[in-house]
Length: 157
Image 1: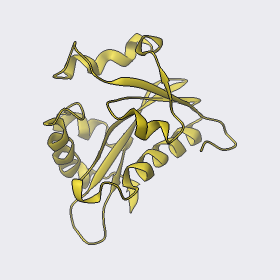
Image 2: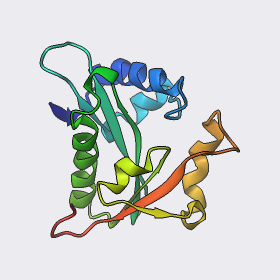
Image 3: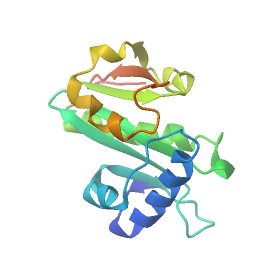
């Protein structure tokens, strides 16, 4: 089940992100930051467990741009469409908010290209986007690529 995150989910979100941050797949996020931005997160909670098994956030950068960030899915649920469902939840919310563009920085571009994202140069993104980069252990030697999706109010996939 995909739903908006609740305060009671924050520690599980932190646990998931911390697990995947150790492998360099996502930027680590302090617990306090997750509490501050809990309304940005969607979560996946399987019916057969009390723990969350996936999360993803839609972070608004500017009036016309948002970022999908912190997409993680527990290993036992990968390959089952959970990541796709989390990203689609973010895209649907972006549409409801009237955002025309959503981008992602990732080391898994093929996944996002299957969802209609297009490769772009990182330099095409506004400087404000790079605020999180200094938190990344890979900074300044980033191995991620930038992709963007242009949303239309009629249909996006």
